[in-house]
Amino acid sequence: MNDTQLIRISKLMAERGLCSRREADAYIERGLVFVNGEQVTQLGSRAAPDAEITLATTAQAQQARLATILLHKPIGYVSGQAEDGHQPAVMLVGPQSQLAGDAQRFFPGCLKGLAPAGRLDIDSTGLLILTQDGRVARQLIGADTDIEKEYLVRVAGQLDEQGLKLLNHGLSLDGKVLKPAKVSWQNEDQLRFILKEGKKRQIRRMCELVGLRVTGLKRVRLGRVMLGDLPLGQWRYLRADEGF
Image (cartoon, rainbow, N blue to C red):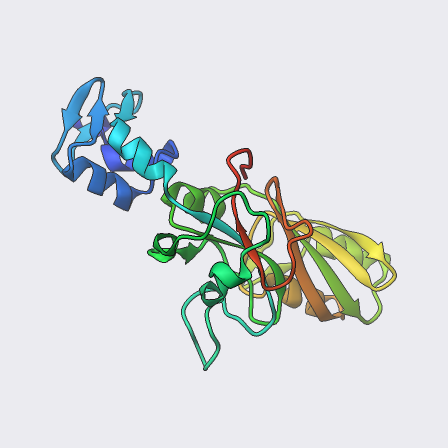
């Protein structure tokens, strides 16, 4: 195999879900990556697309300690960095707001590098994932993610059958046709949206295009992980038996 067919090891590791590319580089620098049984320490090293790549037990143990948190975000908090005087949702993560009975106790180290894996706008409530784990972030917000996001959306206005069909497929935002969605009535004033993409304020803008106004929006599921009965403003750790 010639060099043009080789791929950066960090890219292969990210594509396989072993870790993020940034984490892969850090592991390589520390000598914690093995390709076909050989230790790799040089950044930028390449390998065949089908190479066997493993992490040292030290790196595996480090990954096992990375925290992923489910938060029921209230209105008025932004997902990421503080903006326009509004606090970031991570400010809600602490011992006083942890769900009672959560199997793992809060430890301050879980806040280091904790970042949102996806957005939930300031006017919306529901499930927000915060994680230290690049594998989780890539799974939820990577360019090739196919994970469903489910929302309950309270609306005002009239929606006919054609409008409902357009919400399911046929609308465009920012000059691009949206991926097919699953949109249905939950009750007389609430719609259920299931999307596989997440453009900024997508649901609100979709509703505007068919003459509806969103009066309430709550995310209730990401992949196989449900918000469930997690109280507003509280959080818990992702359990070992859960996966997106």
